Length: 362
Image (cartoon, rainbow, N blue to C red; front, top):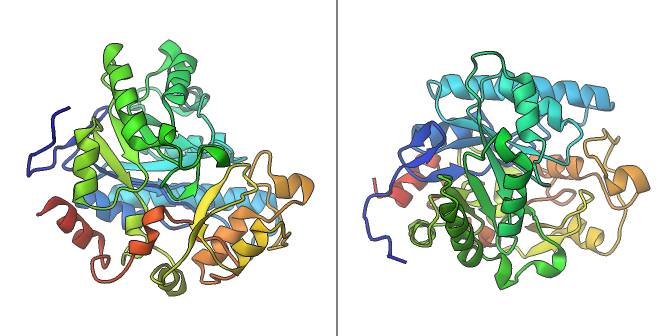
């Protein structure tokens, strides 16, 4: 494969959209990637993905109905404001298949005019059907982007969607380096089989052989221009980056959250009631959770389908644990991060603009 030697990063076309640079902001939920960060990324030439899960959670929320209503209002506001702040730019949303309000969140996203929907934490087999159900006559269909960790998962999505719809792109997220919930069994994490150097070329060749013009976006462990160039060299059309933006000025979170990420942290695999492993900063809470501890962090709002905590009282409420960390209680919450989280330090993470300047040389 030819090495990517151009000094200028190429644009990234996804469906009918195009960005100046092949950089997609990963959608981090519970209020981390909101309109401030997403609009900044789009205005610098990338794609801005709102984390669409858990926007409505707060200590005041006690009932599931109130939580879902708050989610709907917050998601609509974030999308509409971000579109306005970018002059109707490339604003998308990341939605998790395992959430109870998955279909309703798709409805809100479509009705709010979102440009694309990224979906993972389970295979989004029903995504095209839900989008078509809520799209108005004459409305542009948002680009649909499944998150997969293997060629097998991508092939399954193509078969399930059939002639109904084609993905506008695939995000290949490797559990070996990515932060947050990981699309693999614990025993598979760290294996070569799930590495980007293996899966990205496999999927690119698979799509090319079938004459599908579908870009592959590499996610997990992408940090600097060297990483971006390497992903382009192995066939990716672009990269998704999330951890790199965690402590920027535009990250809508507490100073305690950002300060905790700037320390020398152990980054570990954690147990999540979602039913899949995750990668996060080790703290007292995580040590107790991984030892089998059970924690009552507040009223359960039924945010997940098939939640171990909600159904069997095992572990903890993930949405409240993430929100605790977000609002500053970093020893009683979960701080998701990728394996490069240890590299989060000043200078170089002050703003989205500074990061883009470093990544693009502009």
